[in-house]
Image (tube, rainbow, N blue to C red; front, side, top):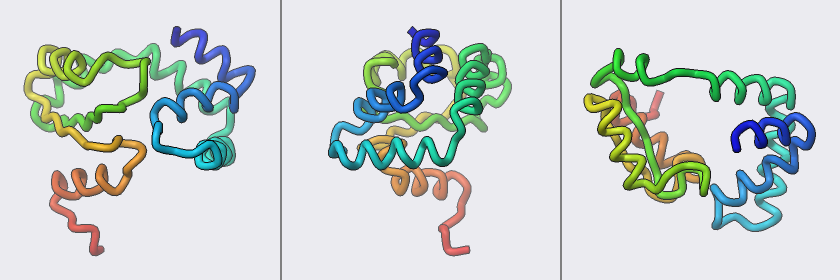
Length: 132
């Protein structure tokens, strides 16, 4: 499935982004999705995104994550990326088994959709209040 997504990104960037952003942001209107796609396309060139997704697909993060131990913080949310990932319960079970020392923080309303909530968690972890 990931190979098909990468192939679609390479041939139809906007078409590949639409279902991804729609499913991950169910509260967004059609106009908001269109604007998100426009922003994505303007910010990240197609060839760069395709190569980054290929590198991510081939990455082996398990060993790196284990080496980080308790320094690793994982933010999850109920809508982490629609149907492409397991349910939050299954994902938490897998993360707990594979990365037992990592911290897991649930962010309601989406880690991407609500960046201010994600920023609050990051500020809490880093001890920065965002004032400077």
